[in-house]
Amino acid sequence: MDGSLMSGTTTYFGITYPTSTDLVKDGASNMQTIATGFDSAVAIPTYNAQTGTTYTFALTDIGKTVTASNAGASTYTIPPQASVVWPTGATLEITNLGAGVVTFAAGAGVTVTNTAVTLAQYASAALIRTGSNAWTVTSRSGGGASGLTLVKAQTIGTSVTSVTVTDAFSATYDNYVITLAGGAATANINFSMQLGSTTTGYYYNASGAIWATNTSNFIVGNNVANWPFVGTGRTTGCQIAATINSPFLSKNTTIFNPFIANDASYSMNGILSDTTSYTAFTLGGGTFTGGTIRVYGYQNS
Image (cartoon, rainbow, N blue to C red; front, top):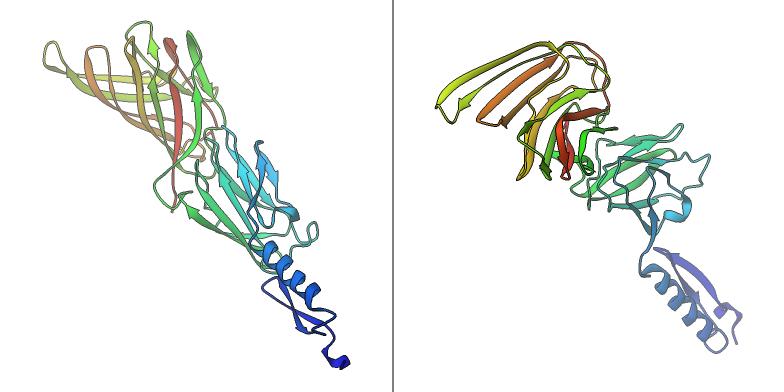
């Protein structure tokens, strides 16, 4: 038989095909080559489940979906070409299953475009290699396209007089919303809030209406130990919805929030007169049980 018909192959989109063949000798093996390539190209996706707060992508993540699952904020890093021999056009897929937000970081010498994309719970993204040490993050769903992104969720324990939330603020966002819902308090109490370890320099005013007498009321606090009115706690439930501006930035931190006191409803504004960069805050002011504190970051773009 003509030797020119012996087998040769070429590859299209990752699948190897025979380009010529001895129909008697090589037909079966070439059919196997096609079938194997097709199975590989359309294989059911596999997963790399990650539960920590840090992870560095690996070559074996190509073709898989990396799943993040942690209640705290997590950072996922793309290593340089010198550490991992990334193929041309490599794409990494990631889905966040945890309550903590996922952010992306560049390894040494790596440039990552669109690192402003962050992944809230159940959001996904693709990381696309566009050059030797160049990657672009593309949001598949949610994940910081606009609006608020959940940074952290923390459940309150049983019969506690204060609770500290760490890793709440970072350079990712300038402004935040803090909420508390659910749980209960042993009595009607107004929650106070303190940033970091700073115990003075909080200034605030609150104006509202007293229900029983249907009169207005105005409260001022100067250089106090904390912001004392950021929400209320009752035996039937607790609530906080406070906007915090610039807690991590080296600027004065300000607060705005409506709240319901024991016998009145108020709107409060305040400022902490220092330029310290804060990452944590503490709620206190009474004995309360249960409920979930959530911290949301306002997208900067």
